[in-house]
Length: 261
Ligand SMILES: Nc1ncnc2c1ncn2[C@@H]1O[C@H](COP(=O)(O)OP(=O)(O)OP(=O)(O)O)[C@@H](O)[C@H]1O
Ligand SMILES: [Mg+2]
Image 1 (tube, protein in one colour):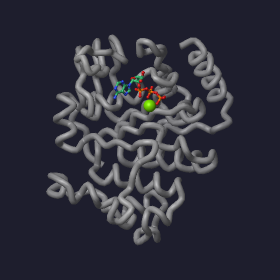
Image 2 (spheres, helix red, strand yellow; image 1 turned 60 degrees about the horizontal axis):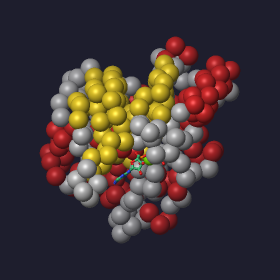
Image 3 (cartoon, rainbow, N blue to C red; image 1 turned 180 degrees about the horizontal axis):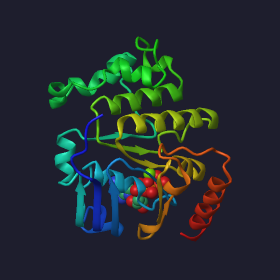
């Protein structure tokens, strides 16, 4: 959608992220975390429950300040990227406002804060069409299926034209066929917008199918266990067949990684 001014979307160096106990004592979930994500990359993140996947996304979204180390988002502080609305978040159970129609939910970020002034990108209606929801604009969230609701949430995240899209198990609650379909839609959007995507999943298939690179995190402390580069397997558009033997092989490697961390 927009040109990236920074060649690096996210740069973490010797980063500790965690939480403060009531006593004020800091408990680092991620320790000594190093990661560079080039602008425009589709990075998938997988790892055991509690290893710090959501914690990392929260730090990038500036919802959680790092304890120590450096975290740069689009070349600057995470807070600046957030204030410029360059980072958008889609959660597993994205909440839509039940009293607003589908269209009004997607338009919501345009009505809040500074983004209103910069409304030059695709309209809410265009994004709904892109997500296969043309004709659903006037419905209310309660009149949608789970998959349709998640698509509305993605359209809402895209309306502010984020450079970075953070997705935390966005399709975890969906059946496999819907998930496959949404995976393909997401790839299409990624190609069209050129945005950077960090996508957390528990599905080995999803991680391998979507990611240009797959980051495997280990737990206690949360740290990089492995980083698989799948770009050589996939076309320039990031595509690979779901049953491609090379993809199946990568899935085996990821499974073995996960058994060890
Ligand atoms: N608000 C919080 N205060 C204190 N500790 C927290 C808080 N949120 C998460 N934690 C702890 O941080 C660790 C990492 O949590 P996080 O949610 O990042 O894991 P995750 O990798 O996303 O796991 P899952 O796959 O289950 O979603 C866990 O041990 C968790 O208990
Ligand atoms: Mg999580």
